[in-house]
View 1 (cartoon, helix red, strand yellow):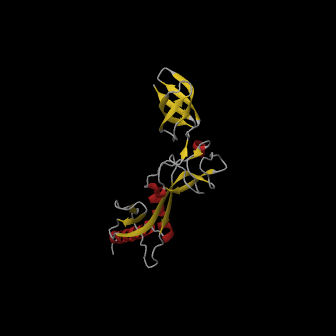
View 2: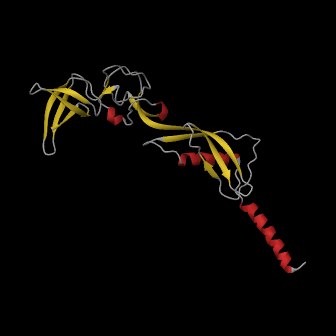
View 3: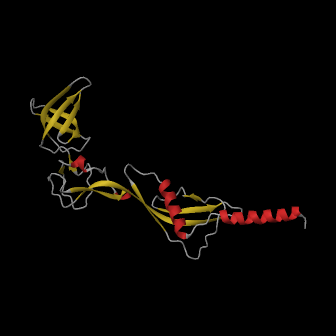
Length: 230
């Protein structure tokens, strides 16, 4: 056998074993971690939101073959946002793929009642806290910081664990004294008034000007504060 033929054979053998060495291999745990990270990197999150991913255990009968190229993951466009079947592809000449089910849970911070809060009770650090809740189970415009609600009052009875929203607390409560601010680009005038109705942050309410007795409409800007734009 010529030296040239021996060289060719040795080169082919070397290339074969080189491919085996550099083939990407993953055990079941590594593949689950791969799917988890892929989902986390490709799921948009709301402000201050977190994601919990639970990947199903692979069927022990499935044989995970080595792959010479980096694995490719894909999430179907028609998934419901909670349960997904992540497709894992190997684009080798002897390509293969498999589907791995996973559950996605996006949680966000919300202010909740620590204990039962009676209607009309003032909210403070003793009766409210922040917890992370499933974003899909939240109804209404929730609040995510206790600093926002300290000093407000409950508009209705709240059970322990209830999520506080702009609808079930009042930043300005009917009959309460408020700071009435008349504001333009060049002028700001402050006076006192009496709220004629409950109001949440950003809501418009009627206020009686204590000085003139006139009823004006303004927007709730803070606890017991109403702004009138001139």
